[in-house]
Length: 295
Image 1 (cartoon, rainbow, N blue to C red):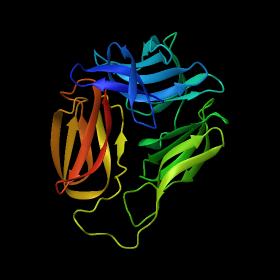
Image 2 (image 1 turned 30 degrees about the vertical axis):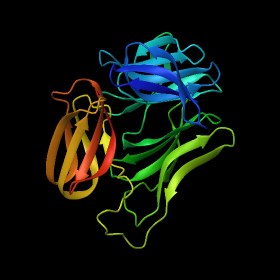
Image 3 (image 1 turned 90 degrees about the vertical axis):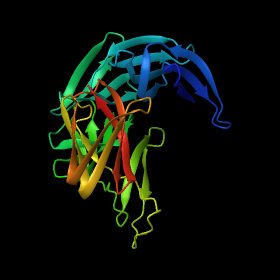
Image 4 (image 1 turned 120 degrees about the horizontal axis):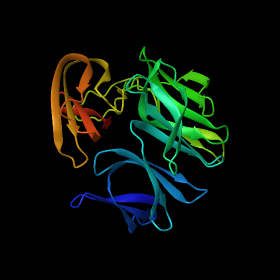
């Protein structure tokens, strides 16, 4: 298994192999200029890693790394990436990118040539993709996306990667309410053809113990990446909400409080283009965490 080792002291990233049985790792090679990694997928045809990351100048890039040598074969500037997926049957690298904050484009990438080609724009009603809930069906060449719409309704979309047409759209509960069924973290098995997910069953009685742990709140962040102003849509109105934003080194770069809020406005003002991580707290308890990209 492959992964990245990040050295916090030097702020350098190294390509590594990981032994699942022991948890030990071996460093292969430093990836020069890489300051953050937020998506990594595997091209099994060429034994290569495809990495969406941020360089030392805070620009988003796609990198292709040879797993046998650790050498970066090619790279390209690729701003506003929300997701990347590789079809090992066709050798095509797909992606979702923010359309200047006004929508989401489905694209293909040719990293060697530095070319991004737009396939289509996703339906305008699809505004919030839940973090980690994207997978790819290589057999039928389809994106599978769990996302919210403009009405706050969560659905599971199956989208033809060649045309961008929605093949299926079915209700898919994703909520923080433990009294309801929830399905999260979809993953498609391209060998068996099965779509897997994590599920927690509905509870008939809440545990009101203040020390209890509730499932994570699936708040919608839109747009992500943020290019100007963004918004986090909450699941209900909170009397007081604290939003905390951290850089990749774990330093607090912003804190803002909101009262009687059902959403949190995010302004790029004063933030460098980079990958950030946020926490949302209510009554001094963190109820949600996530990743935010600022362009």
